[in-house]
Length: 356
Ligand SMILES: Nc1ncnc2c1ncn2[C@@H]1O[C@H](COP(=O)(O)OP(=O)(O)OP(=O)(O)O)[C@@H](O)[C@H]1O
Ligand SMILES: [Mg+2]
Image (cartoon, rainbow, N blue to C red; front, side):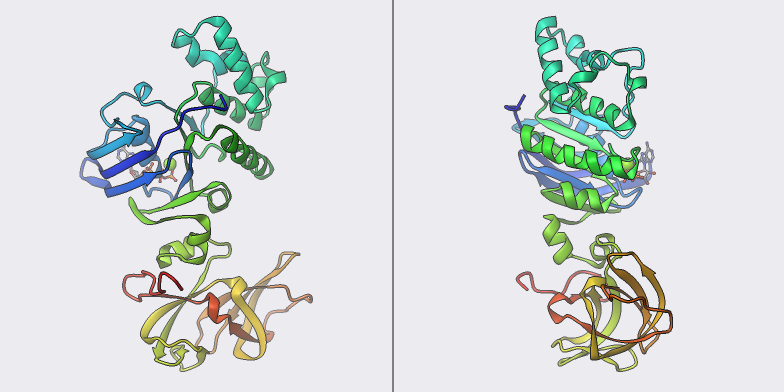
């Protein structure tokens, strides 16, 4: 199993409509061989639809899908060389863990001895070797999800597809499973496409994140790029907790100002723009922009403050104050210039130079 084959995926001009409704208008993207790609986006943006089209569970309305050298969009799922893990992992309750894992091999007519060897190996990969004789009902949620993963990898697919596989688990288990998945991927290196609407899963698991908005790719880049150079206000607000602040500003060529003329940063932009700044990039400075705390949350390691700026707009600030802040406290803030983002006020697309 460590020498699993792997293949790139090429999506070309993929369109998907359900009756009158267009879910994916025109999507082209490449998933690199062996990479862990996460498809991230809000509910209903078309993540599962896209994954299901790659899997063959859903037809494309038009466009082509290649897995490796093969054009697959007209092939049935079992001829595409992939395996899928769902949120709802639906194990056979009356079968042992071992039989659940090996079921697809049995169907495929793999001889018993070979099957047992592969099941043992897959179980070892997900640390379930001691549980092969149990029934799914005798396992924890996380262990059941590992059975579902073992069931997928036992077939040694070139491509592994995951649709929100961790959503049913509690926060602690999710964290553990996330680390296990990352580790598993390092070991087997099958091309993996993982759908989630959880930005933490995306940031921690992905080599590249594809951010979908109404069936369109907003940005497809490494987690670092997505976080530090969001391509649009949509991406900027979708990634980061609390999310990036967006403020309407006007530049006079020397400085950016709020609607009431308050100067907030020395940036040579001319005209209206949307300014983006993450809560953690706003600092306290005696000579900074005056602001008043309207709400504060002390999270132990840091505090998140909601503050009001002189023109009435609000801003989130993440800060390690060291002492409690009460509402109505007056502060002075500075925006770290190197962390400012500018977006087109109409399109929401970034105005930052690609190399900035
Ligand atoms: N069989 C169908 N017939 C009609 N519309 C559908 C069908 N399946 C999905 N849709 C619509 O397509 C859109 C995308 O659905 P999809 O399941 O891909 O979203 P998603 O991004 O996976 O969302 P979630 O995060 O909630 O799982 C939704 O608006 C949904 O209502
Ligand atoms: Mg979905």
